[in-house]
Length: 407
View 1 (cartoon, helix red, strand yellow):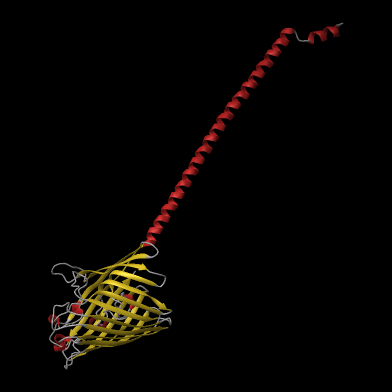
View 2 (view 1 turned 120 degrees about the vertical axis):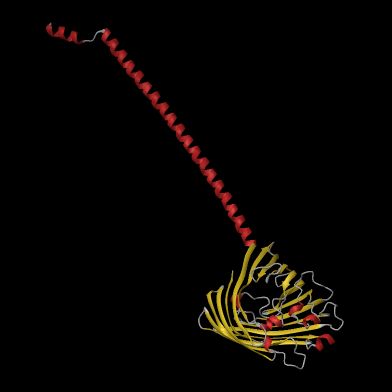
C-alpha cells in the first residue's frame, strides 16, 4: 500500500501538465521567433549581396565603357599622329677664314639654319610636304637673317609608280639641293660648286611629274618659275633666284632629270633645264639659258666618292660681254669612314661664274676634314680650306667648325 501510494504521488497534476505545455508552447514561439529573425537577417544579407553584385556589375560596365572609350581615343590619336609628322634640322657654324686680297676676313659664329618640316597625309594617295627655314638666327629690317618657305607642295599618286607634285618644291638637280641636312654630307659649309653654279638651295613654284620607268631608273619632269638675273649682278645665276616671292613669271623654266640607282650604294644622275629668257624679258641684251649637270655618288663599305659637273650657257651679248655666257664648275670628293661614327674626306673643286671671258676668273679649292657622328642624326664637323684665285679678293683660306642635327 505504501509503494502504491508513492507511485501515485509521482504522477504530475493537471496544473503541472498545463504548466509544462505552456512552457513548451513558449519555447516553440521562441524558436519560431528565432527562425523569423534568421529569415529576416538572411533576407537583409541577400539584399546586401544583391546590391553589392549590382554595384560590382555597374562598376564593371563603367570600366568596360571607359576601356572602350580609351581604346578609341588611343586609336584616334594614333591615326592622327600617323597622318601628321614634324621634323627638322639645324646647324651652327664657326668660320675662321683669312681673305688673301683686300677684302675683309671672316671670323664669326653663326646659327646658319633652323628648319622645321610639317608633313601631312590626307589619304593613301594625297599628302602635303612643307619646310620653313630661319637663316642666321634672326630676321627683320636691318637684320642678317631671313625667314624662308623652301617647300610647300601637294603630292598625289597617279599610280603605284608615278606621282605629281604641285606647289613650291626643291629643284631635282645635283646632290645637295634636295638632300642637304648637315648629317648627310661632308664639310661644314655646302660645297661652292653646288652653291654658286647649281645654285643650292634652289626652289621654284610649279608642277612636277615623277616616277619609276624600270627597276633602278627614275625620272622627274617639271615646269616651274625661272631665274631672273641681270647685268647688275653680272648675270650670276645664284643672284637670279626669285624664291617664289611675287616672282616674275614672264618666262617659265623646264627641267628634266634621269636617275639610276639599280646597284645599292651607287647613284648616277643627270639633269637638264631650259629657260627662254633668263632675265624675264627685262634685258634685251640677254636671252635663253641652258643648264646641264651630271653627278655620281658611291658608298661601298667605308669608301665613298662624290663627283659632280655643272654648266650654264646663256645667250645674248650682255652675258657674253662679262663672260657670264658660260658658268661652270666641278668637284671630286673621296671619303673614308674610320668607324661607323668617324669619317674623313678631301675635296678638290673649281667654279667660275665668268668662264666665258679670256681672263682667269675661276676659283680652285682644296678642302679636307672630319665628320664625327655622335648619333646618325647628330654630327660635329671640322674642315680646312685652301683656295687659289687670280683675284685674291675671291680667295679665302682657313678652317671651319660646325655642329648639325636632324630629326
